[in-house]
Image (tube, rainbow, N blue to C red; front, side, top):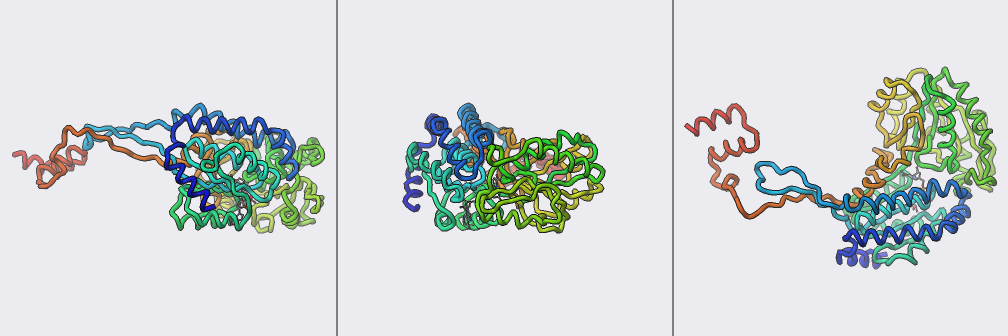
Length: 466
Ligand code: NAD
């Protein structure tokens, strides 16, 4: 690992990664690599947890293609020097901001979207002009192994290298000095990464998880709301960082919401064999999720086969103190809580760690305004769920416990860049003002030039003038 990182640092220092044309060429290479191997990529993810071709395309490959295409188009704009105004004190002169790549980056991926969540940060790193060491998840060996093989075949390891492995390998990588670390994964591991980065003062982007609430107000159009919520919750069998973790329903519409969820689940008929539903990633996680289901609280579903890693879509009645409400579920179990006033539910959410996402279903402008003003969360939707992630122009990330920093499109470019502030002056005109001796006249003039003239300074200035 030391050798890989040293080789990348040496390569970065040759400035090869900096020209826009080099970055473009690498992005084109990545795009054609994915295009040529789409079928193999779909098969690998199916071998890992039966995701299905349609879902693999829309939630993994499409997102990466989109990020690459936008970066290819926007790179000249993102990389340009950005002029800002120059103050009178520094005139004549120009001021501008120069984006520069941070350097050697480490990208650590989770297993739940094994292509999107490794390749999208890589696109951002390439666009910014960084080199990359990727550490994909060990829990999806087919997809991670294929990504590793393909990237090794297509890229010079001095520019883009893959280190496979689990905790020991990641721990060893984290002991090394990188110029930026991009981590996607759980909150506890995020803390480990943050601490390791702090030892080297390495900046981090932490894309973490947590419990993302959905709120259905009494005035919501329940048919549309439930359809969107059910899709968002059970996509990837609930193994989505921004899936609605739990559902808060206004008491007056509880019965209708539950009936509609039952209708929607029956209509779709989620089924691993049909390709519209995924398995749980491994037996340990399947057992963990099943452990969160209290049999006497099950409203819908509940059937499971831990050995086959299948849990059917399950809806449970819940209270804020239940075990299912204490940790991120990350599986196809939807707790439903009933509330009487929006104030109650806002207070409950605010008393918990800041969520990665929040979904509010209402047509009331006052309630939208209240929730957006009072509740801090990474990002989210009004009258939809999950789909904010599909708009690449919305920076994606968490806040507080759900993460730090954001990415996608230009936000991704920014995450792997430093913005260097430069004042650029001609040699002509070097006024005496700042140099000793520091006279009262100079002080008065300085205050005038900087616009900081107070009444006293005016008076003093006037006195000196006399
Ligand atoms: P995880 O934290 O267990 O693993 C993520 C990565 O960290 C893996 O590559 C793993 O090998 C490594 N890792 C695990 N334990 C480690 C340790 N002790 N020391 C060093 N490295 C370690 O997460 P996961 O199970 O792969 O993914 C699920 C979690 O990720 C959920 O909490 C989910 O919400 C979150 N997530 C967040 C986003 C986001 O964009 N914010 C996206 C997907 C998943």
